[in-house]
Structure formats: structure tokens, C-alpha cells
Amino acid sequence: QVQLVESGGGLVQTGESLRLSCAASGRPFGRAAMGWFRQAPGKEREFVAGISSGGGTTLLADSVKGRFTISRDNAKNTVYLQMDSLKPEDTAVYYCAADQGFFRAPGRRWSDYGYWGQGTQVTVSS
Image 1 (cartoon, rainbow, N blue to C red):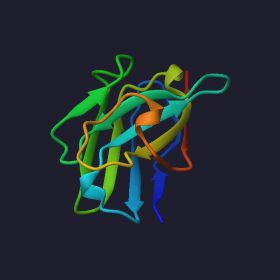
Image 2 (image 1 turned 135 degrees about the vertical axis):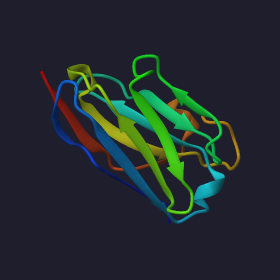
Image 3 (image 1 turned 90 degrees about the horizontal axis):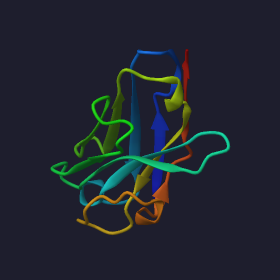
């Protein structure tokens, strides 16, 4: 049974930082691309970042380029999202996702991922 468990969310002020973690279990973590998505109230879930199985390829949404970084530690079965210079518009529930396939490039669509975590709330106050 695949499990993705996010942690690290919270309430911060504009300009501060947070690091989200996603611990994976139940399948060979190091073989699958991983992604982060977010969903704000009343809005659709949107792509934030993606990373290939080995970590050599990363994708970032234009809205977070220069502020967010995605990384992974395959020895720890964990993917991270470092979020710096946070803005109120970053407020959302952040979801970790895993590709159902192996050794594929990370995608930007929610349909590129077959496994999802429960989400962690990030709130940025102005």
C-alpha cells in the first residue's frame, strides 16, 4: 500500500520560509517522479514543482521560480519543497504526489501522478 505523508506546513508571515517534506512508503521510491501541487480555497489544484526519479530533472511553476526549490533524498524516501520569500498568494493546501510509473519525466498535470498525500496547510499572512 502506497503512502505519502506530508509535513512542515504552518502559518508564517510574508517573506518567511518553510520546508515541506513528503515521506513515501509502499513502493520503490527512487524509481518514480514526484511532484508538489497546491490548492487554494475556491481554486483548482495547480502544479508547483516536479522532480525526476534520480533528481536530475526539476520543474517549477512560473509563479514560484526563484523562490521554491524541490529536492529529494532517495535514501530517506523523502521529497522536499523549500519555500522562500513566501507571499500571501502561496496560501493553500500543498499535496505531494507520486508517478504511478517508473523512470518517467516529471509532469505538470495532476493526471501525471497516481498517488497523493493528504495535504498540509500553508498559510502566509500579510
